[in-house]
Length: 268
Length: 280
Image: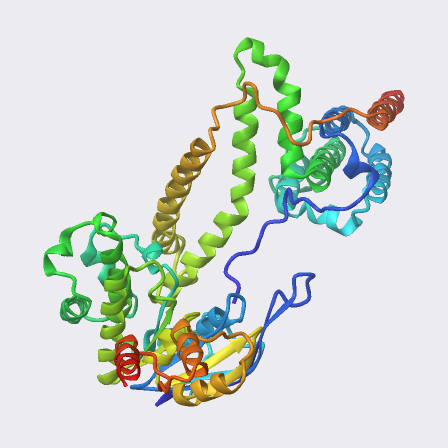
């Protein structure tokens, strides 16, 4: 019996590919460029081009298209909801009417645009976590935020927090599953009853989980202190990030493609 | 009245790259009033087996029956099986959640809809058994000492009056005194008719306490029988996944030097024999 499904959103898939080997900073900046491009799209048809790009990326990173699409599973509901809202609530030329519901030509375009936009945003953003290990990701973010340290922004601390949080997600999943089983063994019934009853039934799971989380946090803090951790200043790295020529090419390529798409879209 | 496990197989994550065969063809019978030890190394499948005994996991193939009811007989049957077969997980103190010890103890029986009066009596009895004074009833479980927490979590399973008790490494992290007390208590409960399944990696413990021993390695049965026959087998040839307890190593070492000492797990008996041998 399986009580929890592991979430696939933001999972790293190791592979030896061109995209995997790029500098994380390059990938973060490229994703920002891609997301900005997607936000600027107006014509729903333009998303064919984006879909093509997605296929190309999946080929370059040696991650099967199926896995890429799976990343969007958690947001399908949100996409449908957003599209629905736009479909029914946009005013304009009426195409179809039923009671208080009406669908307009503008509504259809808007629904497609917003739905696809959201969908592609998630898919492209997913590429970042699919091809970049959490370690690299936080290293990259730290390095990108370093310039802001001058204004008091704690870049290193933020990156460390992120690393720790990501590191503990699977651990906490396992703990939750273990506690769930222990309480079910004591007769807890988590599957029956109304919403309120089921929520109440989760208290015996949540309380021990919180206790464990705090305990782990304290243990970790102690372990870090015992290893003389005292924040970011003066720390060296085992694998310092190195910006390569291929990174420059990749980001230039991405920006060129995004600019091309946007220009094409603006012209109609 | 017994738990019967017949050619039980279990596969984790079937149909994914993470697919692993955790148990392949395990047979086991646990009668009430007996102590069965399941011994094996980490990853041998002993915890997976333990979770099958109370329908937390359902077999991929083969069957598990508790008092003639298969664990696959639907949700209602599974609930009743979970009451009959108490399961104490490894580090059970991690399951404590209630505001008071009283509430913690009442959790299981309330889930099985025991009448309040019976819960009270059962709570008192279970706490007495585990040596927890009644004054603790209104304290928070989180204020108790480590050993008390462990005993409380075991009591909170026993309070539902199970007919069988499955314990996964119940002595892990206990001091010598606590360990001894817990084992003594279990022995007593077995005498009163409880069926105990003791999952452990400690062969010496199994050899001294159990009526029957099942040895698992990589999900397969390596040995199943009485401690005596396991001991004979161990002394004849190495059994896969097991090594001789230190005291037996010592005895066989001494024997090879010509001392005639019987194989024993009792250190005092060994000392007496050795003394006699040296004197003579």
